Image (cartoon, rainbow, N blue to C red):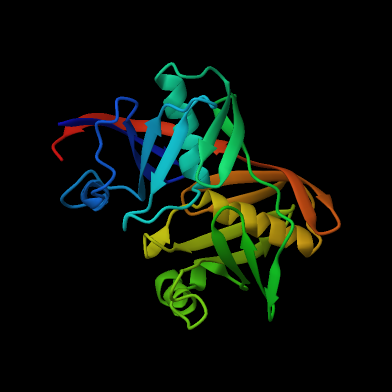
Length: 255
C-alpha cells in the first residue's frame, strides 16, 4: 500500500510519491502505467518520485506513462511544491532532474523554475526543433483550435526521423501582446496533454527567434504559463518557466 499525492500544473497532472525510504521498486516499472491509467488507476500524465540526494535538496525522478524518462517542466514545478509540503524545502531550492541540476523558487503561489541554457535549434522548413530537456517540434499554425492535435501530432512523432526516439509536437498560434496559444502532443503519453512546460519553453524560444521579446505568455488548454529569458544572439540563458502548481488530492493505493 503506497501513499500518493496528485498535483497539477495548468492541467498537466502527476502522481507524486515520497520515495525517500526507497519503498518503490524501480526495476519493475509496471507501477507507472498502473498509476497513470485514468480508468483503473489514479490517472495522470506521469509519475514523479521524490528521493534524497547527498548534494541537492532532493532528486526528482520522472516517468512518462509508458515508463520512459525525460525532463518535465510542469512536473518539476509540481515537485517543488510537493517538496515544500513535505518540509524538505522552504521557498527556494536546488534539486536534481534527469538533465542535471535545477534551481527554483516559489512566490505568490507560482513556481519559477530555472531551465538549462539553450544554445542550439534546428529549422525544418518553417518549423523548429528545440530541446529544452525534452525534444520539441514546433509548428506555427493560423488557428491552433482547428488542429486535430492527436492525428497531426502522431504523423510527425512517428515520421521516419522521429519514430525511434520520439518527439513532442507543439502547434503554436501567434497572438497580440507577445503571447501564444499552444497545444501539445506528448511522446510517452502519446496523446494531447492540457499543458507541457518544456513545450511552452521551447515555443517561447522559437517565438524569440522570430522576434518575440521576454517575457512571453503562453495560453495552454489547461491554463497560462510564462517564460522569461535573456537572449544573446541565438543563445538563451536565465530561462524561467513560471506558473502555478496545486495539490488536487491524496490517497493510498495498492501496487
